[in-house]
Structure formats: structure tokens, C-alpha cells
Image (cartoon, rainbow, N blue to C red; front, side):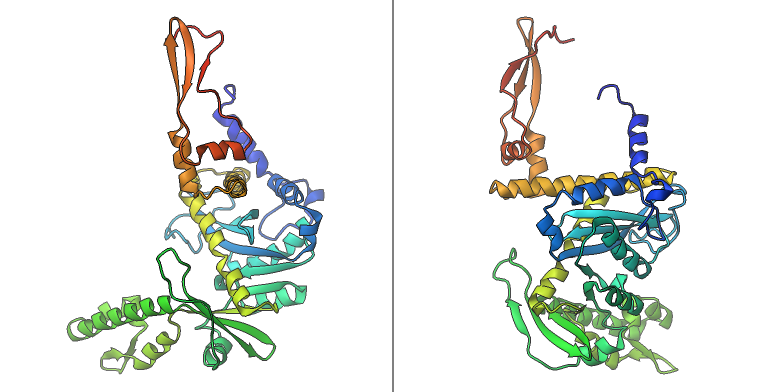
Length: 413
């Protein structure tokens, strides 16, 4: 390790992102080639048991963006920035996780790639790469369109997809207005640590199956927020100018023009109240409505992985200017997420309930001090605290002795 220099690490990272030979490009997407890191992902996937591969696998898919300081090679393009930095070039990252939160693979695309265009090629590539017979795709409403759903159905994939409540006529007109009793999945919280309340109902419109989900706690918060906006809007109508009203997106949704002045659009206020604490799912499965809602809520695992990459792992900003190094850089972060998942899984098997922040904190406390006594050198290990000992046990590494002599070591300089 002491002989490795920075350029060696960069070259190894670039090797992970290098495109494979043309003969090995079968199954690549229109947005990027097959690379060395694909072989690593496929080898890791096939370490699972054959029984698991024969079962239906729930895959959670979501995208985010990472911005560059620089041009960012051919991947660096201007597009919709999740980081609110539209002036910078970016790439799009698609993460695919299983239902336990284990990263299966990641895809890096040019920064102007739109989510609906990329979803179907990505799902089809999962079949090519991993040989999975049955997949249920779980994705947010930002990744789908009418054409996307049709292609998923033609390919025979099962899906649970977030529906666009305001923009899809069938959802807004038929699903949300349909009567029916909700089934309570979780009631009101008794403590802040309890899961959020949830109730669901099934709605069938033609051949389409929908699950309407409602969180009364969230509905109350959104109603209070709207009342606050309306109160502020009424004050602005009496004292502010039209430009200041229309320029505010929160106000603009609740306004209408009479030709002479602006006034509150009561119909828009009533429509907005229909969506309080509500989201609609469209699914091709025959699973119970509450289980469909649970599967969709697992998308929070993908969102958590994105936050971890951007904060803890500091994947952004990206400074590289070669596409292979960029892909390798992002894949190294994905590997780190996989290692974290495996460590937490092993801790759970040891009946150790520890968050990632606790693991890092307890490991940071463990120290080793080098000291000299009567011309001899010793290493003195501190005492492990919290889950530190369990972490060492989980990875199969023995803690060193509390005191050990450095053989052949001279006096400390």
C-alpha cells in the first residue's frame, strides 16, 4: 500500500469505467456502453442462491444528478438539476436496489437524459445482465409516462408506479372521485418514533388497478400550510402589486384574473384540498393494497442512498474529465453503499441494533497509541465502546491485544 501513489488509484478507478470490447456490448442501453464495472455487478449478483433468482425480485429504481466542476467529458450535459445548479454540467445516475436496500447496479447517463426515456431500457437490461425471470419494477411518478407503462406491459414486467394525480385525467377524474372505504394500515402515532399513519383503498378503472393512499397526519400539515399561504395572499392582494403575486409560485396556483385584477380562485383551493396527504399508485400486481403501498414506500431506500453518496461519501462535485474515470468514480461510491449494507446486515444477524452513524462514531473512538519504554516500542490499544467490538466480529477481524511490542522497532524519533 505504501508504494501506491495517487495516479495508481485514478488508473484503477478508470479501469472500472472502461468500455468492454464490442463483442461484449450485447444488452447495453442507448445511453451508455457496457463497462468493466458491469462484470463486477453481475458477479456479485450471481453469488445469490439459485432459489432467490427464480423468485420475483422487487427492484427499486430512482435517479438523481451529480454536477461537475468542469466540462465532465461526454457525460457532462446541461439538464434538470436535482441539486439546483442548472448553470453547471451534470450526469444522471440511476440506482437499482432490491427490496432490502441492497444496491444491484448503477447506471451513469449524460446529464440531459430524461427519466421516462431511460426506464424501459434500464429494466430490459436487467433481464439481459442478470437473467432474472420475474421483476416487479417500483418507480416514482417522475420516471414514467403513458408510453413507459405500455412498454412495461408489452414486455410482461410487473410494476408499482406512482401516478401523476394532477396531470392524468383518469386519476384526477375517476380514481380520486371514486367512493369507497379506506382500510387502516397504521393508525395515529403514539410516539414520534412510530411509523407515519396510513390508510389505503383499491380502485379499479377499466383494466387499470389503482391504490389510493392517505396519510391523515400529512394531510393536516398540508392543509395548515395552504391556509397560511391563503392568509398571506389575502394581505398581498390588498397591498401588493400583480407582479409580486404572479411571481410567487405558491400564490400563482391559487389566483385567477378577472381581467381587471387578481382574486383568489376558490375552485383551485378546493381542488388542492383533494390532494392533501394523498398519493395514488398504479400497479399490475394482484398483491393486497397495503402491501403495494409498503413496496412503494421502500423507494425511500433509494433516496437514502442518493443522500449518502452526496453527503457522507462526497461523490459530488466531480472533477474528472474522462468518461471512464467518471463512471469508475461513481461506481466506487456504489460499492461503498454495498459494503455498508452488508456490514449492517451482519450486525443485525448478531442482534446488534446500530445505525450507521453509531458505527462510525464508535469506530472513531477506538485509538492506538505508540509509546517507548526503556528503549522498547509498544502499541497501546484503547478500549472499544458501543458496537465497536461487534463490528470487528461481523467482518471477521480480531481486535489486537491491548498492549503489544513492536518487534525490531527502535526508539521513536
